Length: 504
Image (cartoon, rainbow, N blue to C red; front, top):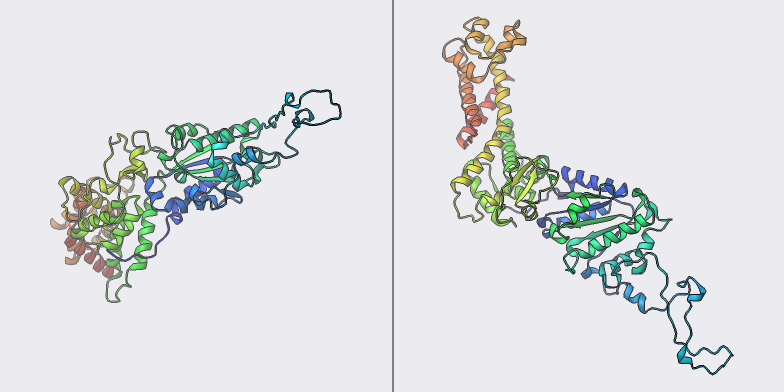
């Protein structure tokens, strides 16, 4: 495998930056944000960087540490409050002061002191967190706010707080297992803060805000869908359609630009440009939203079609690729704004994703990961379809440009009137150009122009005729979703480069 090379971080890709901006805008508007990420981003450590990017975009924030990163100093919690001395301002009314045991007021009437057992009424508190005494998450939030665990809500909904209070950031994947299910502490904290903000009469734009970054399995089952309905207070963001073609192409192009050697001076720049563009587009089409796999494949593959399947299997074996298949293949061709319930588990494992508005399965679901394995018929067909799509995007624009140049040159080599060639060879001439026969001839297709050349209506030079035949062959192959092999690609690039020199 090739050596590692510097490349653009995931958070700097265009699509990811757009999602980060959307989340920062929602937080600035006073909304809570729930960010659902696939498992692979958390395992690779990329989710940590993304989370910090969003949190650092707000002016004031509290990054709640994980239980293992709190430090040696114990957090101030409600348990400590219960055993700490009572402050002088905790009692609201004088009649609530406790009786002092064996207090002598100077009037000894013979009563026993034990009959006046001391009473310690609880201080009045209108804002308390449910189960705060056993909630380690609340204690860590309180430590970030420099208050006791029982005063977290009072601090967050204070009248003089408003927009200046910090955003509470929580990594759900670092939270320990809780009862009765994982994520119950996060849900309890969210509901307590939301209820306290509403009870305090705070408008939606001035309520305390939470940023929760989580995997799907880090939260209670119904929490994402329930928060999705809270349009005024919470924005739910999925790692869904976050990466597009531009993101993968940017990562691949950056990777290649730092690893490739400078082109030779005696080489043809046009031919090198076409082959490099085809290499990048093929990698992008195969890997889809898996940027890590695209980077590895771009470095490992030499650009030849006969080595593509071997390089793909090697890269799949070298990365932490997801295994398994989607239990039920989605009936929809396009994707929603978030994964449906039937594919969420597959999305979490990285098996299926949304890319360019379409559902895309990971290459590991149809290509064997073992480098020594052979592609099956289904896998070979799937790979050919993706390669054909990439070749269509790259080659067809060059075919069209060469067609236009040959159509212009054919005006100088006509053996018949222009009207006769239009009527005899062009099947659907443009009606809006009926009074301009030369303009109509410029719209002739490569197959029609080749027929006119073979039948003697147009006599093209030998090198132009050779290029025309090659264009017809390439167009027919790509029109049937077939793949151009190495020999045809090399010949096409050479002819296009030679024609460019002749026509310049």
